[in-house]
Each structure stands twice: as C-alpha cells, then as structure tokens.
Amino acid sequence: MPTPVVCIKSGVAMSNRKFEQFLETQQRLLPMDASERRTWWLERLEEFYALIESFLTDYIHSQKISITRMKLQINEELTGPYDATALTVHVGANEVNLRPIGTYLIGARGRVDLVGPVGKVHFVLVEKDAKSPTDGTSLSWEWKISTRPPKIKYFDVNREIFLDALMEVVNGES
Amino acid sequence: MAKVKEHIALSGNNQDIDEIVAHFDDVSNSLKLFFSPTAPNFRERFKGYQSPEINAELNLRLSETDTASGFTLLASLEASFRTDYYLRVNMKRKDLLSQAFFALYQSKGLRVSLEEDILEQWKVYGKANNQLIGELRGAFKFRHWLAHGRYWIPKLGQKYDYYSLYVLAERVLTTFAFIDDKGK
Image 1 (cartoon, each protein chain N blue to C red):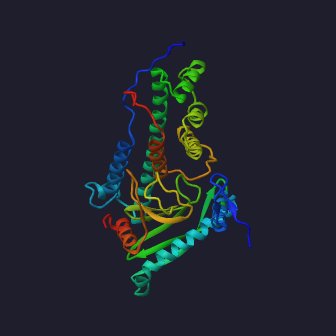
Image 2 (tube, chains in turn brown, purple; image 1 turned 45 degrees about the vertical axis):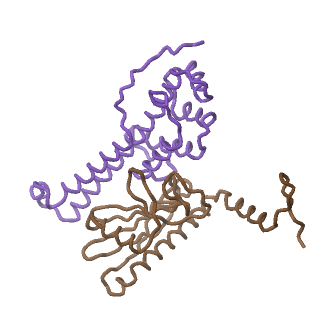
C-alpha cells in the first residue's frame, strides 16, 4: 500500500490521487519543444477539420457542397517550414478557404482563418474556459470562434455557428 | 532631488485602439464596395479584368490595409508606454515602477528604448507577465521591419497581422496599469 503524502503546511494527509493530479499538471506545464508543438498543432488541426466536415456531411452527401484538401507551407521561426493541410469548401460558384495560420501566436496555440470572397472569420485554439483574449486558465485547449475587434469574444464552435460564419464570408451576412 | 529638465508637449493625437478598429473596418468595407459591381465607376476601373483578377487585386489591398492597421496598433501601444513613462517621471509617484523610471530618466532622459528600458522596468517593477513582455518585444520587431521598408526577410518567430496585434493590444491595455494625464 502506498505511503500517504502529508501536506507540510497543514500536517493533514493528502490523497495520493491528489498528488498524482498535481504531478500531471506539472508535466503538462512543461514547455513542448518545437517538434512536439508542431505535431500537437497538426493533430489539433485535423480534429478541427473533422469537426467542420461533420457539420457539412449532409450537404456533401447531397452534393451541394464539396471539400478539397491541399498542402500549404507554414514557416514559423521555431519550427522551420512545414506542410499543413488547408481545406477549400466549394459552395456554388464560390470557394471558401480554411487556411491554417500557425501555432506560435499571440494569445492562442493555433489559428485557422475562414476566408471567403467578402470576409474572413477567425477560429482560434485557446484555453477551454477562455471567453476573451484576456482570460482563460485551463490547461486544456479547445477550438473557438472569435468575434472581430473591438472587444473580441470567443464562442464554442457548433454547427449553427459555423454555417453562419460560412454565409458571412460568402454573402457578407449571416 | 533631481528635477525633470526635459518636457514634451503631449499632443493628444495618439489614437486609441477603438479608433484604429473603426478606421480598419471602414477602409476594408470601402474597398470591398469599390471592387464590387455596385461601385459607381466599377466598369471603367476594371475594364478588361477577369473576375479572379479583381479578387486578387482586392485581396492585395485588404492585405495592405491589414498590415498598415497592425502597424498603427503597435504605434498606439508605444505611445501608451511612452506617455506613461513621461507622466510617471513628471508626477514623481512613490510606487516602485515610477521610482525606477525616474532613475532611468536621470541617466537617459526621454531618449529611452521601449524594448530595452521601459519594458525591462515593467518586467521588474510592474509585475507584468513575462510572456506578455516577450510577445510585445516580438511584435515590435515586426513593427521595426515594417517601419524600415520590409526589404529583408525578418526572423519574427510567428505570424503577425491586424487580428493578432489587436489581441496583443487588448491584453496589454487590460494588463498594464498605465496612468493618464490625470494621474489615474
């Protein structure tokens, strides 16, 4: 049986589970090296695309929308150049691009811009509990849609919000 | 006690970030209108163009507007830091940051470097987040590159654009306790 850990301050025994959680948190706080960070970001990017494709499945099956993939080179100083996937969503005569920006960014661990003929919408990989660029303390990261300046707000990405964003960048209205 | 010998007349012309955002939005929307068939001189201006060429030219103009507005955001941040430095020195406040600025002023006057002097004092005495200071230093490298004509390939570490610089500006203005000319 493992020996219980005792809190020095209070003298009260702390559960081993609590200490293990503390160690896990400390491990997660260790900075990733550039190669790990690039791999991590590209995995999150694929998760984001899977989410977007799930929102569009019905329209893809009914051939009202199609999606093509292409490679885009991103060059960040810490990682050097690397290939990332960009998506093009074909909607009627319009093309809308989901363009990955990178992982070393101010206030975010990743960004994808949805770029259409008349607009651009930003999706950012930020702390799960972040509601704006000035808060968020979670150690886990989640894709959010960002409002435009001023006073940026983040919202969870769901099907309705994504379809609104798609209309906005094509028509200028949602 | 040493006195403040140099004075600058604060112009009050420095833009706040809301003004920069409003300008960016208006210019971007105007460009989109100018490049659309509803513009009054569209047929004359784009005679002989194909649709993709019009879009490509529009995207170039929008991209330049994006860059120029990012530059203005950084200039506005620099104005906030330098105004704060000047006011703290003049008001001779007792907080540690103001005292450090006054000591800096005695050796360098108003010719202080934002990155090496002002930000360094904020880091030590202003309890500013080190990561945010690092992000600011990186962004000012981008500003330096723009201000000097972009003729070399910069080593910037990350992508800077209007959106990311706005995020930086919002975080800085929320985090740093700048004082204004009313001493607040």
